[in-house]
Image (cartoon, rainbow, N blue to C red; front, side, top):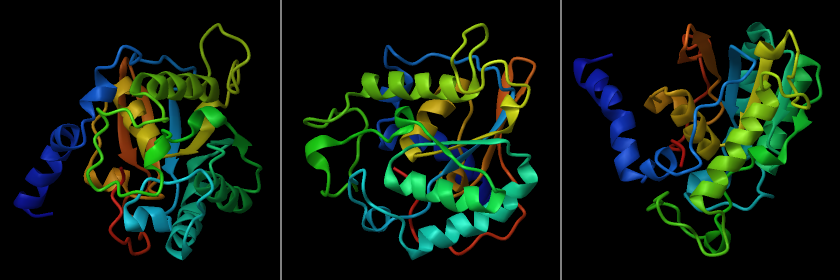
Length: 238
């Protein structure tokens, strides 16, 4: 990587926060650090959709396009090496379809979780998302704080909460083998909650991300980042 590219990548997260209004997520009253049972887990954003490609706010029913299906198919064998023991996925079609493609490869059935849905953009669905700003609450959509609170509760449920029964990973010795398949907005919330910075490559569709807790600090890395991924179009997340 060239020096210019390294500088651009290093500045990406700070620039993204400003240009997309992500400080609204970071600074909202509902944002907090979660303390899951799992000390290691994998996050996978869904594969590409035509809505991603056209840069529009998406309905819950939109499916993967062929590129998105190819991305999920490419990620699936890589994830065979990630010691996955459980798949928990958003029940929005694009994430659920991704989860089923991966699940078939791993010979396991994904578990749906409505709390992992993307932020609902209400009256903006079907319109351009090119100028998306997370600071603004869409008419008849999720308020920022509602989305953050819902996402964090879903992550705790999927990854387990110490001393609180009922979560999917509660008292599970294999909680660290959880694969969460969700959306770009959920990834932003997770990054702020765990105090990690995202790189440009990490927000692309179907890029497996490994979260690891060492001591009291979380880190994030692309799982198998040296593995050849299929060609990406232009979708770099919300």
